[in-house]
Amino acid sequence: MKIDDNKVVEDGTVRCAHCAAELGTLPDHTSEKVLRREQPSTAAGAGVRVDPSVFTDRDVVLRQTFCPECLTLLSTEIVPSDEPEYRTWSVTQ
Ligand SMILES: [Zn+2]
Image (cartoon, rainbow, N blue to C red; front, side, top):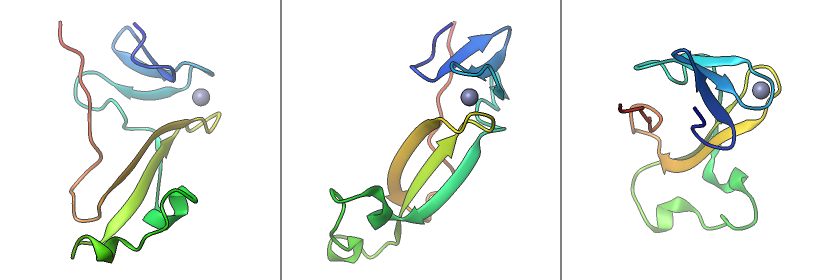
């Protein structure tokens, strides 16, 4: 089952769509083996230049996940740093 352009599910295992590396397992550990990187939000590029403190009192970070084998970028989000964990997804049947 295709989850998105970078992830597929085969027999309860989430795999990279490009190299078939295991990323996690259904239902609760879908991103257990991905690589994670957290940086200041301004590291997102030229489109994110304003200091987040102009808009909020919370620290804001750029979070990204990557395939542990081929290093394909799997997800990117700019979120308050005090949010407990990356946003998740699930498969319903
Ligand atoms: Zn991969």
